[in-house]
Amino acid sequence: MASSFNSFLFFLAILVSTSYAQNGLVLPIRKDTNTLQYYTSIEMGSNRATVNAVINLGAQFLWFDCDDYTSSTYAPIPCDSKKCEIAKGIGCVGCNMPPRPGCTNNTCGASPYNPFQDVLVSQGFAEDTLYSKDRVEVPQFPFSCMNTRFLEGLASGTNGMLGLARTEISLHKQVANKLNLPDKFSLCLPSSGLGKLYIGGGSSSKSDVTKSLITTPLIINPVSTAPAYTVGDPSDEYFINVQSIRVQGEPLSVKSSYFTIDKDGVGGTKISTINNFTAVHSSIYKPLARAFVKAASDMKIKSVDAVAPFRACFSSSTISTASTGPSVPTIELVLPGNDVSWKIYGANSMFPVNKNVMCLAFVDGGSSPRTSIVIGAYQLEDNLLEFDLVSSQLLFSSSLLLQNKTCSRL
Ligand SMILES: *[C@@H]1O[C@H](CO)[C@@H](O)[C@H](O)[C@H]1NC(C)=O
Ligand SMILES: *[C@@H]1O[C@H](CO)[C@@H](O)[C@H](O)[C@H]1NC(C)=O
Ligand SMILES: *[C@@H]1O[C@H](CO)[C@@H](O)[C@H](O)[C@H]1NC(C)=O
Image (cartoon, rainbow, N blue to C red; front, side, top):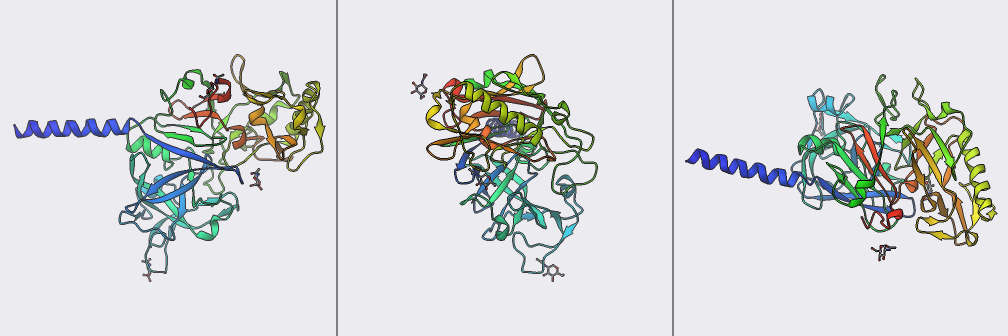
């Protein structure tokens, strides 16, 4: 009797934990309009400290300012441990001050990176419980502390960075492993209001827009693009196979080698939430801007003096408004398959620099960028993106405005 009661309780416990886990985490996304950084909020540790972390698709792990952090469940990850190996920790760090979070001996070395300052800092890995506002908890979640002075460049009100790269210690992978969910996440950056980051299972069935998502393979760049890495490591950022670009249906004339990734990991197209505007190789930027200006002029849109960092700007009063934003030539990133492309409409291609002028929101990435096309955050606004790391595919909606939706109204 007792044993069947116990197994009944055990069964109940499993039911409860799976019904919790099935949901994964749903985190809010806010936009900082001064920097075009997008951040989410999580709670960490026994005192549930709020961390406002800038979302970085290309970063390997979570870091935040621990100066005021206290938590009875904080635990440093020891060097030479299995967990340190999983975190790809380098070396062993110590600290000569009184012990506290971010100051412990024999700790697995971490190198948190602030891309806005381009600095790599020496720290140690630790773990603590991560909570979402909707009460899902992820135990023993790895992260590193960051010194306050290295927060400069982050949007005001934020105190950390959430890495979502393809690593073992990124939030989606940890949720997949610890809550037994598929390794998928969805990102919907808002133009205003609250966007959403779904971790564990993506956004499926959350909205009917998921039925019309377009699928393209995520590809692996064989050479790491991280600021610090071990020779031989592939990149853990998200690359897609853009094969050409069309403006108002016309393909640009660009050497195809810029679109492919060579053996040194140079070239290709990645997706970044840290670049505010899409940056493209000069040899792509020039024909792109030329074709855009020409097609705009065919639509009776008047060019005006450029406003840096942009090079192609227009008089707003000569641009009409459509459901997808300013009515301007459509830019298409052509992907593998039969007529598959990512269409970019006015809401994502035009940036209003003042009330009279809007500019083509693409920037010149110079003549020798590591990656030829870095799709930036402004181009991702109000587009639903699902990163499916089980099948290594990206599913994307293009502009939700086409369906009279936005990321804050999904
Ligand atoms: C875009 O990012 C650059 C570099 O971080 C920054 O200087 C600039 O203010 C940002 N632009 C906007 C409109 O947020
Ligand atoms: C680390 O070890 C050194 C040498 O034993 C000691 O002086 C120091 O207080 C320790 N630091 C911490 C944070 O425990
Ligand atoms: C678009 O959505 C808004 C808000 O949900 C609604 O008020 C409006 O009627 C919709 N417009 C169309 C054309 O369906």
